[in-house]
Length: 348
Image (cartoon, rainbow, N blue to C red; front, side, top):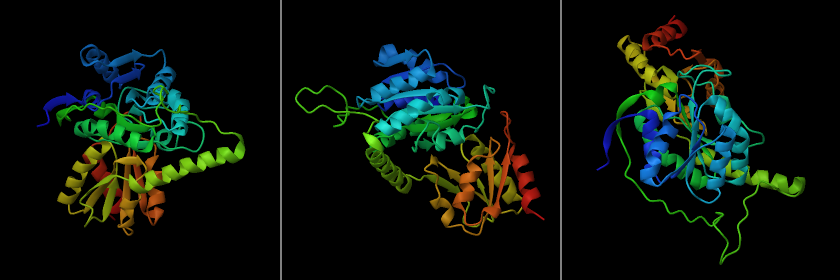
């Protein structure tokens, strides 16, 4: 029987990552992610973990790249400004096929912002913040339970596709405390044939991002695109709520999706048929979720000026039927606020 505890989001992810065989954590303290490195630092002596407080996020990202190259599970946790500093390493990890996990606990921006919930990192997470044509799988939990569940899943996906995986949390989910069922502890003894583990008795492995000349470099990039196409086809994930009879479908992810659920209840109590599509993968964006609803109205809610809304418009049949509502600076809307906006936009 899995263990049930009352736990904070950041700590639930860290504990679940440890139980999933991630023994290496490298990070630089930045709120609101700091409980994760604190948790690893506390657990390191008794759990046989390796914890290093790096001098910068640049160092931390490159440290996890180094461990990933040996086939070991490694992760870091940061927030928007720190993720920006790590984007060069993200590009290299994607090119080199290194399966690392990065948790981005989003906070308001631009620049330093505040220590609250926000979703303004969407573009840099799903569009590839570093240079070149690459993607990272991006998972978006909306509960402490999913924070725990996505720890193991993120490593499984990273290793399946040899690609970095990002977990998009936020300042609300990170501090929230809920009942959570933690995974059973496993021992991971990966023996990847590509890992740099010493070449005694076998041909040596090479992990590189280089090719000789534009023809080879294009071939290298085309191979990467084939992998990304496979991910896009096979790993779109989402959850639907009361969509079958809905006239209006809210599209929301992360903590604001929780608020939207109560707004849906209020709307239905007032005779307005509202449902929700909650993207679980931000990349690949769950385009398949929208195909079966070509004639619905869509109401996109984000804690940003509007970023995911662009992907919704690309996914739906008629982008003119997509409306947007966002809050900025760490302000989160209330369910009643969302309901009033739905009435304003759709009830004539």
